[in-house]
Length: 117
Image 1 (cartoon, rainbow, N blue to C red):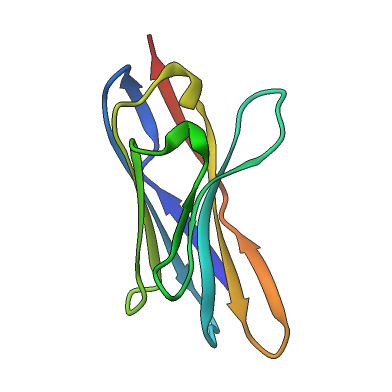
Image 2 (image 1 turned 90 degrees about the vertical axis):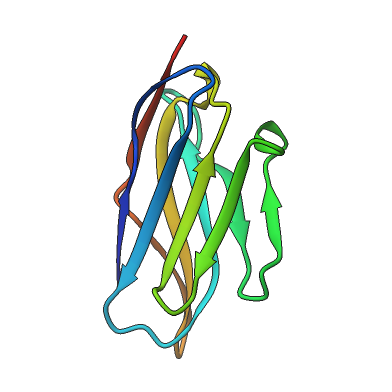
């Protein structure tokens, strides 16, 4: 299973970006899909995730600004980020829960988001 993330870049405060992550390979079924981020010198934290049922969860710091969605047919998860702030600057990683014989998590390669003040 491979994850390919895209959509990062440089944006000014208040701007928007849309991250996408596509899963490929030998996939049985996908459970929860999510986005995490890691700023320099900090731990990797959950930004948002979405269950196969559509239930979503957001970090308090992004509620009302970010929206996670998924397209099960395309094995894709998106993160729409609006009203970006400098503190959103980080490397963003997508994550999926693969429901094979054994449940296993996979990570994408990371995409850098930089928000300038």
